Length: 85
Image (tube, rainbow, N blue to C red; front, side, top):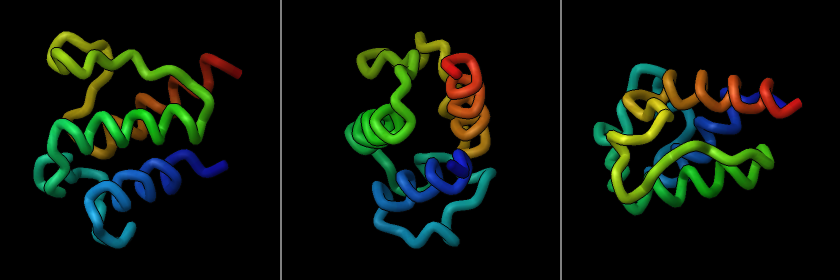
């Protein structure tokens, strides 16, 4: 499974964009994803990879998971998938 393309696909779907429109340096905010969209994206990513993302929806700044860009999300998911395998 290609983690990068799967994560980009989930984020693109949430932003109602084509996957080609989602760049690695994009922020979720720049893609138009609000806090609810972020939570839905995290749930979809957890389901797609059968992992638990250490993310606190009530206080994202307190989470150990970096959501500052698409690249940081992909890197975090790759790390979690590797740790769980």
